Amino acid sequence: MSTTERTGHRRDLAAAGIAALVVVAAVVVGTSIEHADGTLHLNWPPLYAQWHPHVGPGTPAAVAVAAAVIVYAPVLAVRLSWRTLLLTAWTASMAWIWSLALIDGWHRGVARRLTTKYEYLQVIDRFEDIPGTLRDFTRHILIDSPGHWPAHTAGHPPGATLTFVLLDRVGLGGGAWAGAFCITVGSTAVAAVLITVRALADEEMARRAAPFLVLAPAAVWIGASADGYFAAVTAWMTALLALAATREARSPAAAALGSGLLSGLTCYLSYGLTLFAVVAAAVLLITRAARPLPLFLAGTAVAPLVFTWLGFDWWEAYRLLVERYHQGAGGIRPYAYFVWANLACTVLVVGLATVAGLRRTAASAPGAIKRLWAGRTTPADRLTALVLAALLALLAADLSGMSKAETERIWLPFATFLLAATAFVPKARQRHWLTAQAVLALLLNHLLFTGW
Image (cartoon, rainbow, N blue to C red; front, side):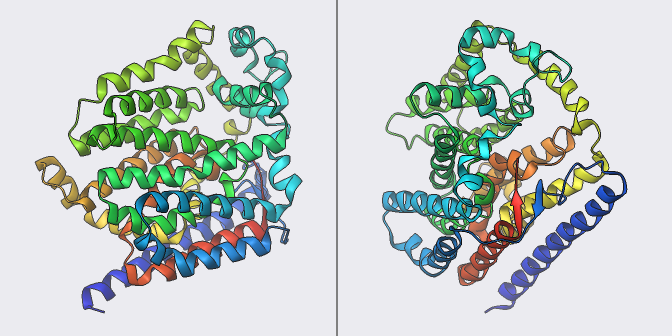
């Protein structure tokens, strides 16, 4: 190993160590605050979780999947054909998410996740008349309004709840089907990010990131979480835009329009996903392509036009959401703690391997931005720009003060693209960092009962 490689590795370890200390500080300081005045409304800060060491039916499978990915994935990621790699990565990701979810058992880990008092499935029967409910939606956002919506329904545009209403309408009602849907769709985000990285950077970098995208600690929260589904929608929106901009799709026009349709949908799944405009802009900037923009914008307009025609006022709903947010725990939780503790949550979601990748991303950022401006980029420069855009969107969400706690699931769409920074991890160290990722995810799921 050369002196440069040794120095880089030491700096990676130092960055990982600092990130680990931030997590420890968030736990210690958060526990102290919660014991003192209870303003965090968390049982195990900074996560929305409770301490409960346990094993479950998914334990053997989770350990087996982790071991298989650590041993075989670095080799398979190089040798498999591209299409086979995408299918294998999706399958392995789904196995990893399912096994982690089942550590908590079928009912608690999957079937009941989306049926708690805060969740979308609590209000399925109130959408019997969908247009009528949409026209009336904003009247039930505030906590002191008659028949106010549960927290998650009130905190999101109605597209989120309508997803589960439509599942119910086609015979896939109940928590088990909802959980299976979120896991199946959420796991496809791995393939979408790989496609994006290949289109914007190159195939080698996508292959290097593939094992880390599969074995991400984020899988703990993708399991039976609607935010895992949201992450997949934003990931495919970005992938289609990248394919349209680079003209690698069979029909770049269809890809641009499809990306726009998903972009519009994201605005009606979560208000915060409007920040993905930063990532979309980065894709067009990286590729220096404006051609997809008209069809992308046309597609983006479809969901707003449909929802507005049906009677839902997005801007009024968002205004009321901000008021509702401050009526509840969001108005009590201290900004001064969460503005940095949220970042500790992100470390737990993306893992220390991603921290090492982000350290390398930051180191290369000045040169990458300069070359991007000059139009003489390398694949590494283009990947750097993509990761920086996702990080910028995440930091904007953090500074907004509208994401205090539960960011381990709320920020999954942004975290999914931060994971791409693992492509910068040296090949010789891949298995070491993969082991760190797996150990973190297994510890989280076995020591804590996560909730949302």
